[in-house]
Image (cartoon, rainbow, N blue to C red; front, side, top):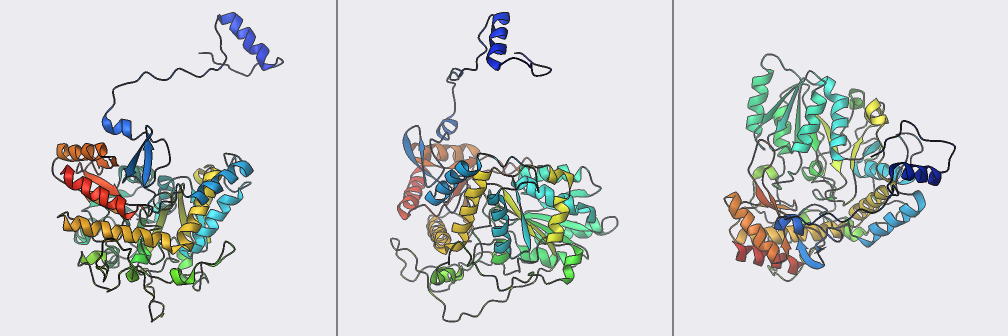
Length: 502
């Protein structure tokens, strides 16, 4: 291989290349390499080489499979309007933003930020290239105010790595608490704050990607309220676009004000909604369907009965009145249209949200006040970070518009989740009785779960076996993901295949 200290000058490139070829006796023209030699691969490695986009069905080696894995819960990553927006952006803007932050920003980047700010009812929003980058950016901007960081023990390795990188340059101590256990969180806080540590920051997922469980935020807030100066950082990656009346995530699911996230101390005395308390989804992209946009998550079920799940998950899902398996659940309109009062956030709350998991786009977003986001943008690390590729930003923008202007897409996902989990429960499986589109199947040993996974793959049903939650917790499961694009017959095929594979 040849290396140049500097680019040769004064000769056309073809002359330079010809001269080098004559000197070294070989052809240096770039040519396509030979395909790599076929190697022995496992069944799963071979089958997960897709020929097309991941959706309710995928093409693998020219054959069609039902896909119940990965992410993209709203099924928008292959939506015709999303693909068309991507193609148009490639032709108009090229393949990359080609610019640093705050310099010559492409319009799709700005539009994603504007749209996200409207959705979260905040003054502004920042668009980042990845979830870990967004989490690290927020943590870097606030870590100087905290000396103790507590994370749920099921925190994913990628997020934990970002936290450790930031804390390596600070004096804060990192500890963990038991998964979704407010009592253990209280015990750890009391023990750690008794002498040395005084300013705790708790980090948790809204919905845990591997298990589909929802963090008990009201209980966490109750614990943190007893510790002056305590705060919570919510990684709402798997909840944004799915949970809540409008799909705005875990805070909306529990009835909290979204506009109060990511604020500075100076913002505490300002209007928490930044004057957008009467925010409407109507804008230049078109009016939403009023009849559909006014449905709530609770209205998905006709009789209003409860699933009788865990109290800390505040689940409100019941059997439809008709009880039929072949009919879609019917959305009913409320007679009483009084707006539910949202609760203020009990402690300071920071939040990042993925634009990948449900929306099917790219990157992550940080909503918040102008002063808070200015702190992040002014950091040298963030200023010199690249924008997301412009075509993917255009695709993400279209995904946001489809997600938050067309409630029927999210309602279709809720229908699928309710039906699937209800049937799983009838089969004797323990499921999280909530509207998260993730179902963790744990059926004993690692060998048995791998056997089930391979048996289902042979029946044209793709599922993932997750061998461990993170490096410290090797408790794996068969992770099933549901999409809005799954049809009822596909869910039945999955359930039948699973039962025969047990």
